Length: 438
View 1 (cartoon, rainbow, N blue to C red):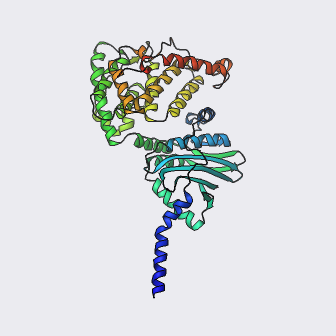
View 2 (spheres, rainbow, N blue to C red; view 1 turned 135 degrees about the vertical axis):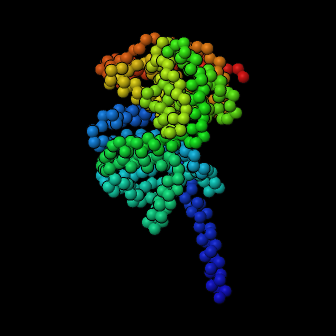
View 3 (tube, helix red, strand yellow; view 1 turned 90 degrees about the horizontal axis):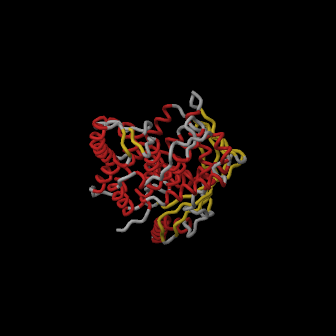
């Protein structure tokens, strides 16, 4: 009897210590794949090309689209998605990296997962074998720290991870996107995806994106700043149908300065509410639904910089994107917009690109730290002219796709990069980006 009791005690001690033993085995001190690796220029270019090639506006009437990526493009997408996950709010999560190798009917995914440091280490280095199964991917094998996990551990562990991630907003958004996938194919240096971007899928993704961006507290802030905007625009509209952008910025940022909340959050809402006001593609109703109908709508004015109404739209939209998201995303969408314009009647515009770049930098400053966010509020609450935050760019300068190719070849050519460097030098001299005395 004593032997049996002793055996049960040893077994219980082993079971209790098993999680610690697994941590000791699986966690490592170094990442095999850096989780903070920068998003390289070539990867950004790859994403841009994919966006242009597979723009939803060029889909077939049925919404069915075939997406084909090589291994470099697939890894560019993985690098971008990893950076977005790295900005998530999972308490124990600090970073993720992923790299894929494509082969016929299979793929190998490798990377590192960074967690909060423990006495056992802080990195989980993994390798997973993936096989397509209809519209889904199945994890055929998983190795952590060089240890292959058997199926009886792998399957319940993956189910637990999926259940946990379903509670995270970033993953819910990813699931909304993945729901449009109809088929997956692997081959040498090839990933094929069937996509169904019908109206229902697009609406589902848009609704999920709205829930990611607008929580109940943000809704109330948006309504409050909408009222400030309304009260600002109303007397201007009584005398004129046109106003300069800084005349809207001053009262909005003055209101933010008086608010005791986090200045980064206030700045985000300001650029979002201005985007709703200036852009036809975005409305307060899109973000808030029926709550927005209770709010008075500000009279519509033509808002300008240098007598142009396109520059404020570019600047404000880029600022909103950068304030809410990663800098690379803002740059990516800014360049995409301009390249897209070069395929249409408006044409690629370096002056619009300048406004995009200015807006991106302002958006970063507005949400990077509390000190910078409040400093920016003080600047815009007292700004007297648009030239304090936007270089003089002159009249519209649209360039067709053919002319762009003839003049600059592509977006990595020395001529194009030199043009961007000159724009960046002008931006650097703006008052808004100069260090200010406390």
